[in-house]
Structures are given as structure tokens and as C-alpha cells.
Image (cartoon, rainbow, N blue to C red; front, side, top):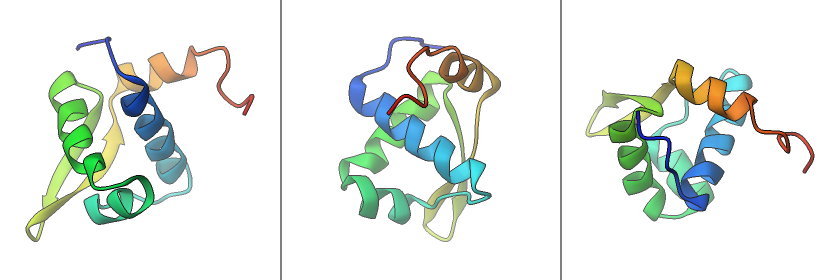
Length: 83
């Protein structure tokens, strides 16, 4: 797993975690509508780094989960929830 992530990647991970916590497995188009078209390529980059689990669906994909390491890394952040 690559622990070096950008601010954009971190923002996207936090938003995905919000979706998943609410019981929603967000599709690529949902994330792109919220955070811009670049979100799709960022999601694929996060998958290659071992942060998210993506699943294919009808010419697109959805986020099934954050990996256990991603959950641990995000839960270890001291400022999570302070926003």
C-alpha cells in the first residue's frame, strides 16, 4: 500500500467514507458530480495505491469499500471530525 496521498486524494477518501457510512456505495458518476470529472481518475489511482475497492458496473464502477488499511489510516487522523 502506498501511504503517500495528495490533498485531493484525501478529500475524496473522506467523502467516500461519508457515503459508505451512510450506507451508500457511490458510483463513479456520483463522485464526479460532487467533486469534478477528475474524481474518476483519482479513484482509480487510489485503487492502485490500495486505498479503495472498486467494482465494475455497466461501463462504469462503484466504490465498494475503503480497504482496512485506509480505514485505519483515516481513523488515526487527529483532525477528523473537527471540521
